[in-house]
Length: 355
Image (tube, rainbow, N blue to C red):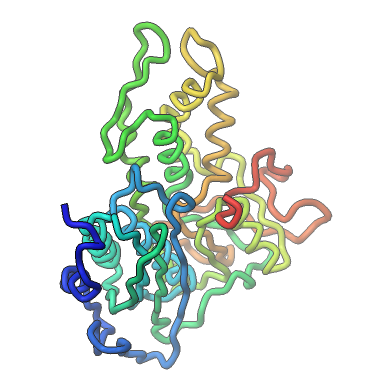
């Protein structure tokens, strides 16, 4: 096993750079002091994000490839949420000296595969040693002549719509933390009571946490269809919807029955997690209220699915991949976000700064 400390920076980069995608907007890729990108629109959309070991990922169940996929996904989703097409990533990596070099090359492969659906390039960055793994990505995007879709454009009467999955990443994390699925994606049956064993296919939920797949094309489609506001759902539906509502000066009212398909997809995992937590009837596992409480937490508060939330004029047909989940209403004296007209009875969502 070759460790990072066994190689020079140049030797590590010699292993990484050939794995990185070039991207259609790249005029000059890695190798010089800076990359050169085409900007035919005359504007650049730019965002940045960071992943810190044991805050945003855990090395004991996340491979370098997983972290690369996650780093690409969360940054590309921010560009898609503006109605832009992602074009390039620049990545800075801090890595302890005892890290296996394969973890680093796996990260590069994950970045490449994460960029592939968008045709984006990974065009350079920086490499440094440090006490823990840190991955910082800056992403660029092209509006292709469109106006950016902001958080502040929602108006009363608009339809609220969602693209992507909801609560899957939170469910995958809960399964990992409860020891019900061992990464890499090897399920461990849970005996809820004598003779009752759950063997559901939870791997796709864990995959949604380790390697999220944001609906990148849905962002451009929403912009072209006339979306009035949009944002990436990284910190939980209620927390992020609240940001959109405050920015637009409106109230978001979700349908109480929204995300029914996601709830059914997550139900067996919720039963197992609740049972592993000691909730409910030991003759089977959790009772209905326990399961619904877990599901509510994942659906309304769970983060890192990187789906998109947008608002559309009521007379605009929703683009493919988008589902209506509520309405924009006039602001009131109560909360900025309601469910079926009532104040939500679940947590506000994830806060990565204080996690």
